Length: 309
Image (tube, rainbow, N blue to C red; front, top):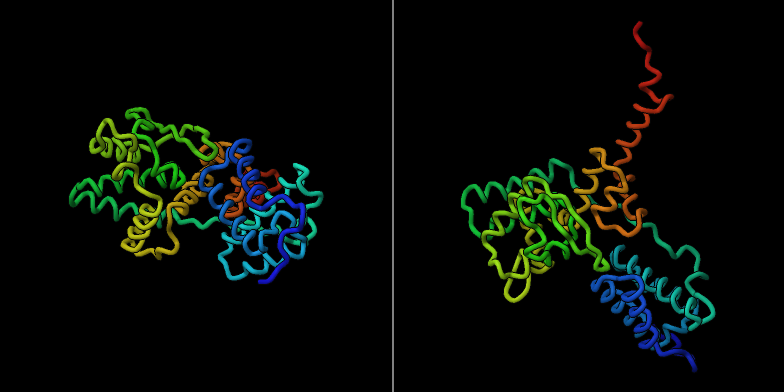
């Protein structure tokens, strides 16, 4: 794509991007993964525009969007978010007078509903893990049990789980202290099954280990966890494309909501900075919400049923 390059007098893209990422890190507490992804997205956009991203016109930004039509929806949403926030920062700081994104109609995509699993699906996944452990309690199977119970039982992000410190959980205390996005700590209650699985895992981890799930000089990786979960799904007879650590986090949220958890509690457990993120789960469980209104509202179906004298 041949597009005009950087206008004269414009702040160089590299400097503008660096200032933007520094703001996200220092003022917004953005996670390292977010900063890295945004940095790659903006650098790629800058390269496409010949170094003229900071001074791009609405037409140039629109061409950028058009060039992403073959990418996965999640990738497109992230790239658009990076550009929206980047140009909002430039205008707020007076680096440029206008925001080209605001001149493009309909650039804000709707957020897709999270993928999730049924309770029966999760039972099948955990049954595979439990069967293996019952046959032979190897260190690998004990570790897998702890990972799976924490993923579903506590709704942790993959990064939070793999990098969890050894002392984040101290049985018999039934909770974990988790450091999430923006280095914010939160307290996560543990199910009895998760606590028991962690107790078994702790017996295998040296007391001087920094991590609960060590590997080499560090901890197990997200990529390794991703492949592990998909392998369990395949053995459980579930399409591996439907299952990932993040899908198990979503399953935790939807199942909690279905069983009566309120949104504020769920927001705290998931570590969402904005409750609008948590509210997505109400769309998934809309059937329960409808039945609740029909059952409890004065003019609901149950209230209109004839009463026996």
